[in-house]
Amino acid sequence: MAIADPVAVLASGGLDSAILVAHLVSEEHEVTPIYVRFGLAWEDVESRHLQRFLDSLPAPATKPLIVLDLPVADVYGAHWSVTGQHVPDHSSPDEAVYLPGRNLLLLAKSSVWCALNGVPTIALGTLAANPFPDADHTFFAGFSALAARALGRPLEVVTPFAGRKKHEVLELGRTLPLDLTFSCIAPRAERHCGHCNKCAERQLAFTQLGIADTTEYATS
Image (cartoon, rainbow, N blue to C red; front, side, top):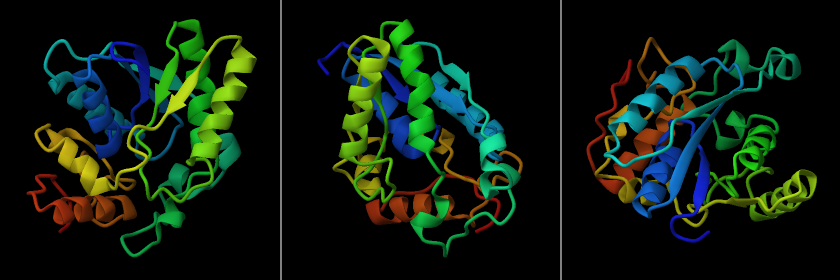
């Protein structure tokens, strides 16, 4: 991916993907953020935070946010991510927050959008410690090849942060308005719950880097 090439970023509004958007903009890429709406319990709050973060970036910033709908309730059924019940808490292992086929689903629809809109690269904010089967180099390389064949044009899936830990990515974006990002899977009103697995991961990253966490949590 050369400087100034168009790139779509699968943006959730969390720390990693938000910082990735800003990082690629700083490298003078033409960045289109894409939010894929699955119908999960936290998405309304998350998507509003994402738009506020994008609006905060200095001009020239990104292309307008693209929102793609891909409901999964008919597949996921009563999964905690859909119902909002029994959400993995701060004591849960990372494996507990696995969303089956999430990256496969994210990439399937966004790759078609990219092919139809002349964007040859999709970037994700995947980190070094990601334990999930659809988040390693083999999967992304395989998907790139499959999508290029299916769509009849080159498409590359890249993960620029794959060698970094979360606090290292946080260091890269420490001057950004990170309080506008959103990492929670059990929001209370418009705030982070302060108790779920993703809130704990967020809090740990700030602690490891040693900078103030200005996130507003519903509970301490």
